[in-house]
Image 1 (cartoon, rainbow, N blue to C red):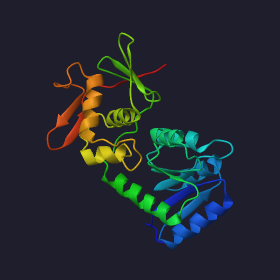
Image 2 (image 1 turned 90 degrees about the vertical axis):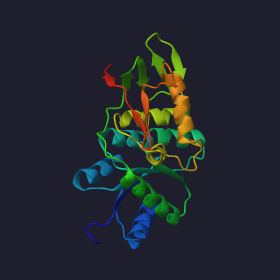
Image 3 (image 1 turned 180 degrees about the vertical axis):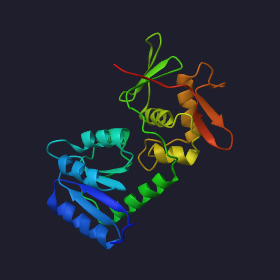
Length: 241
């Protein structure tokens, strides 16, 4: 295996799945390391550079959702979730926790390979950013808890956010001060076939502005960068509890 080959870490408690994926990805020019759970995964991540994690959701001990949340707080490695859960809510939860894609079991290894390549391409086109401390962000009279689909005004008024608005606001705050193109916003908000981002970026920005801005026609929080995209321009302070 070439030293510069893409390194995939497969975390799944099913031995057959681990072995079959390691063999398939290896035959397709990728280096594949396997782990049967969170403890082994942590050991592998501490000793080698990994380009992407394929992560099973339903595992004994620490489950995939918890692992995904933890990895997003400490690393920038892309994550693809493997889930036997067909419920749309569970898939949305995974994406909101920071997963880059998901695949429902049983799946075709060729489709997983295609998803891996797609996620890696999207990751390469994104600007680098410091990993924010997920928690409660305070800006322009609002407080936003990343774990909640709502924003709270200084007078205590609660404004609900849709799933797509929540993902968009998380992304904009993560990249505060950075201009993001429409294509980058689509990639970062997981705008594939998932229905989470089924409207145009411009329409989603407009809807979010109507909830955040004093005057949506003269926005001070989310700036339009003509020809470039959008930028979260407000100063963000993190609230510690």
